[in-house]
Image 1 (tube, rainbow, N blue to C red):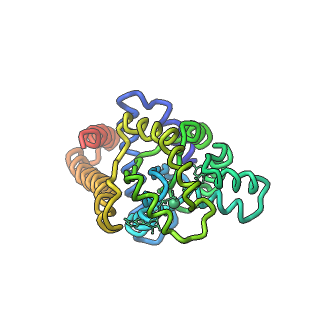
Image 2 (image 1 turned 90 degrees about the vertical axis):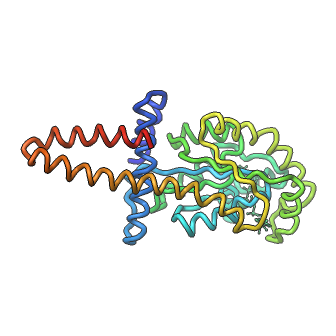
Image 3 (image 1 turned 135 degrees about the vertical axis):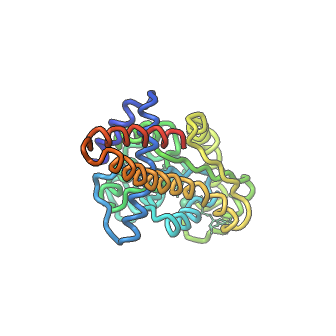
Length: 276
Ligand SMILES: Nc1ncnc2c1ncn2[C@@H]1O[C@H](COP(=O)(O)OP(=O)(O)OP(=O)(O)O)[C@@H](O)[C@H]1O
Ligand SMILES: Nc1ccn([C@@H]2O[C@H](COP(=O)(O)O)[C@@H](O)[C@H]2O)c(=O)n1
Ligand SMILES: [Mg+2]
């Protein structure tokens, strides 16, 4: 169901109404998530997904920050790299091809990665997703939009100097086949050539939030926190405003002309949310 809602909104994305609807969807999906989390209720699939892509070079700290975002804002964390490594470990049909691609620091065909992400999204009870390490290429991006039928609400870019990224990867010590100097150099070249254009694309669309990924993990998270906090504040304010207006209209019309009152309320609500 969320797929249908999302593709409907993306098909009218050039218009004023679409922009407004997109904001409404973002806020609505974030608010319901917070409320349901507090009550411990599982979010139904009908909710519009709230999608955050998490981008940055190898070792820029994407995974580390995703853990903090999950703890604070209750997202589901889908790491494209982890999903691919799980395929290798499960010895699936694509396992050997994925292993060779990762060893070479190259990019796995988009269809394979998007299908893995799609499966995880469908299995999840959450509707707020952090998609980590994806899209890595224009082909990844287009494939996601075609297969999943949605665009991200937010794109985070962890901007880190190469020297620091190399140091972090070489110290990672998790036994990854690509954590060696030779593969890191290849991954950095792929990042410059194929991933930066995707980052620029989202910058032009006004969806990109660039984080200076140097300093301690906590210092970096203090740059991330306000981004999601702002979405929460907007959604909670919009909810309170709607309730206030609802009370006002119901009293004003003494419930005689409820339909007109609700219509006016909706119009006003959309107007106010667009302004915010
Ligand atoms: N701010 C930081 N300062 C120092 N080390 C860090 C910082 N953030 C993360 N690290 C460490 O750097 C290493 C790489 O971090 P992380 O795995 O989060 O990066 P990543 O962007 O997910 O990398 P990859 O794309 O290779 O998966 C880890 O060992 C992590 O503990
Ligand atoms: N969209 C993606 C993401 C990852 N890969 C491959 O996995 C490697 C490790 O990814 P991390 O996000 O864990 O760094 C990466 O170097 C690619 O080989 C991919 O192909 N497509
Ligand atoms: Mg990672």
